[in-house]
Amino acid sequence: MRILITNDDGISAPGLQAARDIAINVAGPDGEIWVVAPAFEQSGVSHCVSYVRPMRIEHLGERHFAVEGSPADCVLAALEDIMRDTPPDLILSGVNRGHNVAEDTLYSGTIGGAMEGVLHGYRAVAMSQYYGPGSATAADPFDAARTHAPDVIRRLLAGASWTGERYNNFYNLNFPALPAGEVRGVKATFQGHRPGAPFGVQPQTAPNGRRFLWLTHGRGNDESEPGSDSRECWNGYVTVTPLTADLTDRSQLTPLSDLLEQA
Image 1 (cartoon, rainbow, N blue to C red):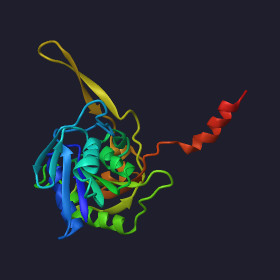
Image 2 (image 1 turned 135 degrees about the horizontal axis):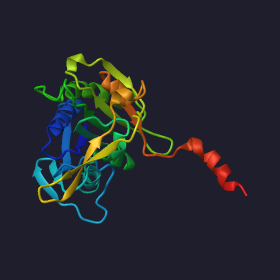
Image 3 (image 1 turned 90 degrees about the vertical axis):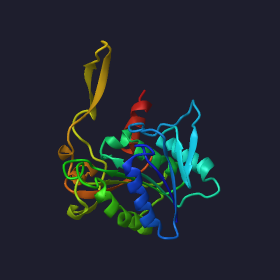
Image 4 (image 1 turned 45 degrees about the vertical axis):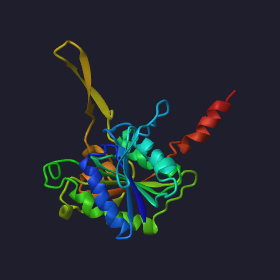
């Protein structure tokens, strides 16, 4: 099996090595692992692509490349140039440092990298590791992801649906902020909703008098619905959420059509 890895934390991020370990486990002894990741951190860029500027590519080693661009750029660079003659069987995006659940999925470069692969017809999985007291100060903060991801991915490859009605499916995996041995299980979940705005801002005035704004995160995952990715991963479960690129709210098509047809 040939696996392509990207991320949004950058080519030097520790989560990238965790993803490589996961990929080696999944691909097996005869597998082939390719890394094409951003040269610099690209957190929060969503599905951004470098539409108005070129991407510089640096070959760092065997099957190891850094791209000055977003995660989606990296996948584009891999599929259309670097791996054109050796396409991957699977794309892994992550392992992100911090969760990508609920509204985070709309901002996440990790999700954007996986989605770009899906739009090109490839199977893709996004992986994110919750950070909290149970993981942030641990010897291996990615222990839960490293330990549980290979089995979940193998199960998805063996039996999950990868084709949708219009856009193909991909999967968003989140791992709780716990040591691997304390994870409570694996759950299929839906994208959560946390009350209130996802982000706010905190102003700060620099010594030179210039004004800056820092982003602040919104409310906690414990306030989201039971059964959602944000709530269940907060409760200690590995969550697996099927996603698609289609953002249409189909329940509104008929009432909207009726409204627009009114004389």
